[in-house]
Length: 215
Image (cartoon, rainbow, N blue to C red; front, side, top):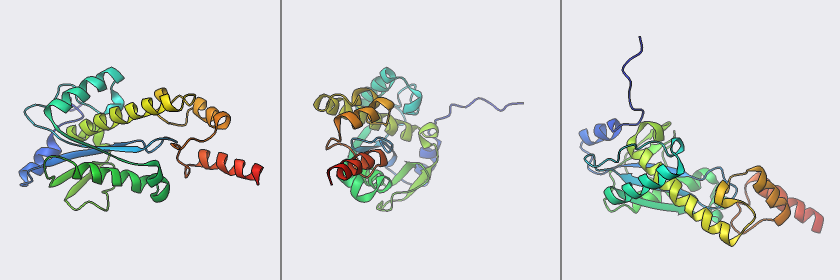
């Protein structure tokens, strides 16, 4: 017989940390590891347990309009910090380290001094100086991480829409820099922009081919 139904994301990780005596418990997530262009963006969110917006869930499970509505709600009722690692930092450090750097910056930018972080994934950023717990699929299990996933995704999507206006033809307003067929074709036809990650194979290969032809 199946057990009782359970809302996948809940506040149990936060409650456990608060019960240990931590005061500022935050959820942290990032978006933008996979795209060929644009920054990687992280958010850190401290929820008020008395004011958690209804319907809060992993950003990937929500429609764009629902994400926007929850983004606005969270900005009005939670402590929120957003930070980025640039394309240059991604190429210099590697995408994993750059995403962790963005997470560290987001935590540092919060109004409260975070003393415990709930991190989406299986790794804790090595530059973090506070206690932290890595939670695999945390954006689907932990409400604070779900909130961070929404803030990070909406913020980064808006950045990519702005960049699409500066560099039309790559479809960033729709693909957010991910390697869709249309984006890859545009890379071949239009070339590499300053916002493309040169360390990523499809971009690197095009640059290498260009160098080979011109060499």
